[in-house]
Length: 239
Image 1: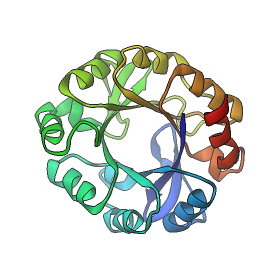
Image 2 (image 1 turned 90 degrees about the vertical axis):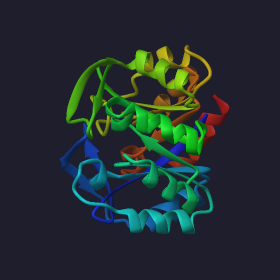
Image 3 (image 1 turned 60 degrees about the vertical axis):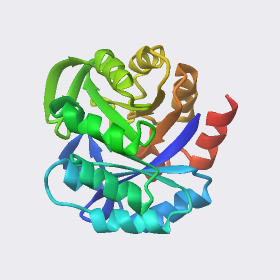
Image 4 (image 1 turned 180 degrees about the vertical axis):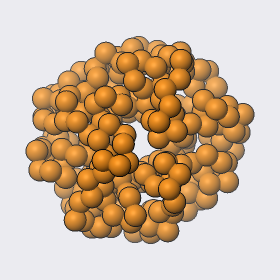
């Protein structure tokens, strides 16, 4: 299992949210490029970069993200406010390994399907953020009646190869991962399943590995020194 450090960006600085609330952002005293270099040194193969301002309709960190893509020596997966084919293609053509979409998969499925046609299902990740199994959109501000597993199956049927599952109640809380939801999606088969939210210990890394997830995205626990990336990568490979 890949262990993937997150670089979440607010106003060109690395930050983390608490349960998706941008008004509860913790801004760390580290620049995104410095974070990239730190995680590269510690063995990351992929970094997950999120434009939180774009996700919440409060601006854009596109210039910063394009710089990260250009400077990176590892794969860069980009998320946050990607709601058009043009923006997705701009990031991919700049060198992003994958882009992540969420809201448009629910609200504008025709746009999501066009992304698959133009970019390929292996380069676009569907993010299914959920609250107790119901999909949340618009930066988690709106909870729909759509069920996580149903939408994961729809994504697979459309041609997407990657799914990112985040539990709203776990994100930024250090409360442990939501294993059951991940296992439900992994059982569908044919998808690379990424999981994010709640990691606080190496035991959480072990639990994520046992679900069969392809990758685990970690943010707050790394930035606050609760676990080291090197150790988490080791556990992801060995356990």
